[in-house]
Length: 113
Length: 116
Image (tube, rainbow over all chains, first blue to last red):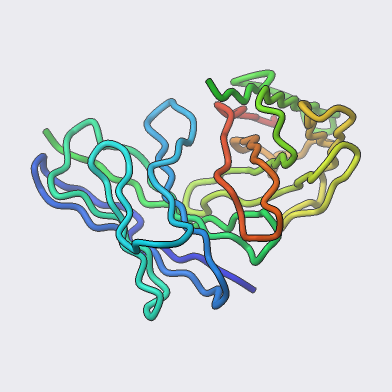
């Protein structure tokens, strides 16, 4: 069965530190990849997505992610985090051509002011 | 503005009760989904629907059923609530993916259900 793995479960950073959250998936076919964010008390919203083309994808709020096909990875990065980035982050990948998404376990990011 | 609404933000029910969670989307999306979100487990798919009256089981359908009588509305039913169904329930919708993977899903605010 397909799976998505987020290696960092809980990350604590100081403001202005750089961020990289790992995401690996198991599906070997054509992939659509997503990063979602859930701020405290808010609903899940899309940070960025990759369908095809340039493997370096830019999203909202200064986030970016790089699709590395050979490594089955789609890591999320931000050069300088802010306190307002404190949230839970989820990586997701399509389950074949079903229209469904498989989500990782989530990474809780805590940014200290 | 894209919108997915859920009938309740917080719900407290007793063991054995029948529970209805309602979800409505205003984007004319074909696909609708019900997930439960638990700490350390991410989002797990309960049921999804590709069209009116169409439904398919997700990864954890036991103890749940769904209903989709209209395109914009997707209901999750807990036939006989149990304490292990205490969780955050998220509804989502997306456009039909035409067999080329999956499109972005739009999420509602969630319903935090407590079963006592």
